[in-house]
Length: 256
Image 1 (cartoon, rainbow, N blue to C red):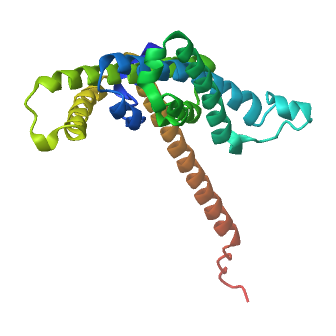
Image 2: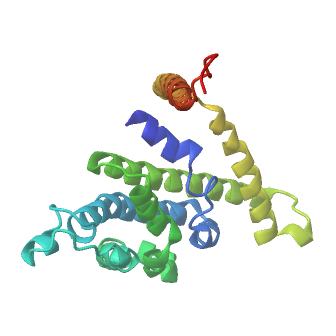
Image 3: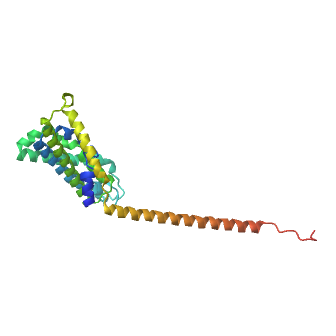
C-alpha cells in the first residue's frame, strides 16, 4: 500500500508524469488560496469516485456471479462494461454537484474564486483518468481507495507548489514575451523534469517479486526445453524402429 501511495504521488503524478487535468491546473494556479481550494476539491472527488467506480464496475458492469443486475435477470454472464465511460462520468458529475453545493454553503468567497472551473471538475480528465487507470490495473477495493486518495493528494500538492512559484514570479523580471502562460508552461515543464528523478526509485518488495518471477520463468523455460528434447528423442527412436521393421530381409545364398 505504501509503495502504491508513493507511486501515485511522486512517480506517476497525474500532473507531472501523466499531464492530466492541465486546464484547471494552469487556470486556477495564480493564487495559493484558490489553488488550495481547487486542489482539495479534486482530492475529495478523486478519493470518493475511485473506490465508488470500483464498486460500480465490479457489481454492476463486469460479468460474473457477483453482478447484481445479472443475478436479478438470472444471467450471470451479462456484460455491461460498454457502459463504463457513461457510468463513471455520471458518478463523477453527481459527486461534483454535491461538492459544489457544499462549497457554496460554507464559503461563498471560495465558490466565487473557483468560478466556472468548479463545475468543470466533472469533466476533469485527472479524475476520470484515475478511475479508468484503477480499472485497467486490476486493483482490489483497498488498492483502488488508496490509489484515489494518493493520486488526488499528488494533484493537490502539484497545484499548490506551482501556485506558490507563480506568486513569487510576480516579483521577478520576466521578459515581456514570456509573461503569463509562456513562463507558466516553461515552469511546469521544468517541474515535470524534476519529478522524473523519482522514477529511479526502486522498492525492495518489487525487486523480490521481480527476481522470483524471473527465476520462475527460467525454470519454466528449462522444463519446456527438457520436455521438447525428450519428445524429439522419443519420436526419433520410434521412426528408427519402424524403419527397421519395414526393411526387407537380405537374400540368403542358394535361394531362388
